[in-house]
Image 1 (spheres, rainbow, N blue to C red):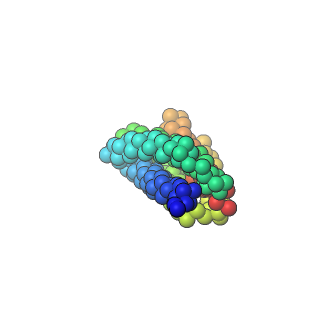
Image 2 (tube, rainbow, N blue to C red):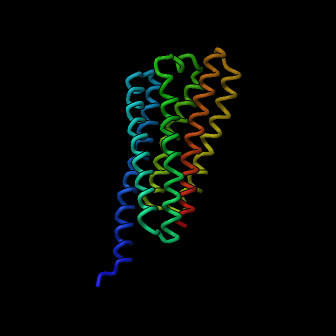
Image 3 (tube, rainbow, N blue to C red):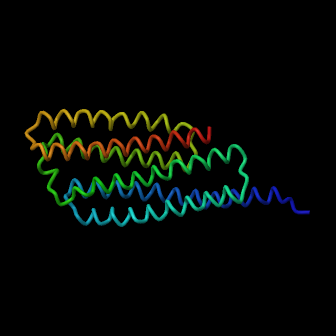
Length: 213
C-alpha cells in the first residue's frame, strides 16, 4: 500500500526545490543589476542602464512566479513546522529582492547625467567602493540562502558596517567639497540607495538564518 503522506512530503520538497532555484536566480538577477548599475553610474553608461531596466522586468516577472509557487504549495500541501518557517521566509524575502532591483535601477538612472564627473575624486572613490561592497554583500546573501547558513546574517551585518561608514564619510565630503548643491543632493540620494541595498541583503540573510537555525 502506498504511503500517501510520505508521497506528499516527497512532492512538497520536489516543488520547493524548484522554487528554491527560482529564488537563487532572483538573487543572481539582483546582483547582476547592481553590477550594471555601478557601470551605468560610474561610466555614465546608458547601455548599462538599458541592461538594468531589462533585468528589472525579469525580476518583477520572476517574483510573481515565485509568489504563485508558494501560494500553491501552501494550498495543496501541509508543510511541517520547519518547512513552514522556511516557506514563510521565502514569502518575506522575495519582495525585498524585488525592491532591491528597483534600487539598482534608481542608481542606474543617473547614467547620462554626468553626475560622477561633477564630484570630487574622494566622493567618486567612495561611491565606487559602496558599489563594490554592495555586490559582495549580495553574493554573500545568495550564498547564505543556497547553503541555508544560520551564521550568514551575522557576517553580513559586519560587512554592511563598511557601507554605513562610507555613507557617513561621503555625506561629510559632499558638504565640505567643491560640489554644486544639485550634484551633492543627487549623490547623497545615490549613496542612500546603496545603503538600502546593503540593508536589504542583511535583512534577507537574517530571515533565512532564523528560518533554518
